[in-house]
Image (cartoon, rainbow, N blue to C red; front, side, top):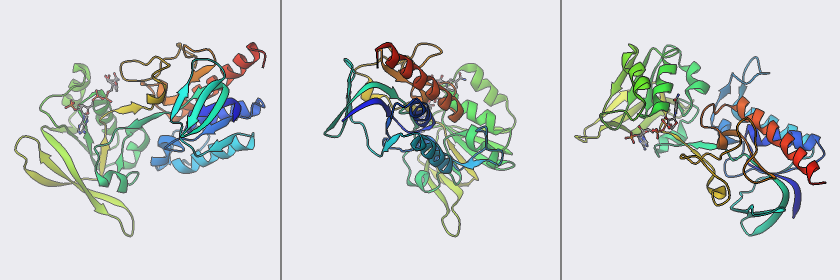
Length: 311
Ligand code: NAP
């Protein structure tokens, strides 16, 4: 099947690109991918997206994005792109065995938070367990939380959380941080933060009925193997993000962490007609509103590209 614009990924960047491409009469197809709606689907209230003064639930917001894109003719398919060939336009895109072609491709596959791999992370995700302090920290005002990790993200999240939480524990599996010295020092100097060294969260406990609520974690001493339960209100997993760029790395350049490279201040990749936006390109801001902004840029650039090749 042939498309003028193919958008791969359905978070704020992908749907915003679809709204703009749709309004330009380009009938975009959106391949929604393995996590339709993106990371906001695992958040509860979103209070920092402009235009929602009372806040909005993450999944509800993504439904609104989808509806708005469909209103302008976007063909949203709940399909996963498994392979691409970006060697020349029309570009080839495979969804399992089905081959699609497109004049222009917008990549908005986002990033996924890395998780420890515990069942409780799924059970209590959005109900005490989070991977985003900026998104969810506010809900832990006056409460005690754990941040897992020893990199810059964990340091940043821990410091940020002290604005809301009464106490922040940083649980790290080794006896030294990987984070930059300055970020470490901020954590070590913060009287509201206590570091629990050589420890790993190995189990998560809470109520499921009548409401899901995180109550405690089991910590394991990584040196002695000793285990103990620790009551806690919130668990922030900050062990890194992984950009969802694997499908594209044969064709496009990435930085050392796998984020797709775009020309500064644009959504332009090294291949004319292929654009990238949102968290798959962004290791710094990672916000819904910035992703939406770059999605808009990608669609406008795609439209101009199509004009330039006489579409
Ligand atoms: P990172 O540097 O890869 O650190 C991940 C941390 O999580 C490490 O301390 C690691 O422990 C720990 N970890 C990994 N897997 C784990 C697991 N399964 N269980 C428990 N702990 C685990 O990731 P990041 O902190 O997200 O940073 C990513 C990049 O963004 C870095 O280059 C960082 O400098 C940059 N960044 C910069 C800023 C800033 O400058 N403002 C802010 C955020 C991020 P080990 O140390 O034992 O491996």
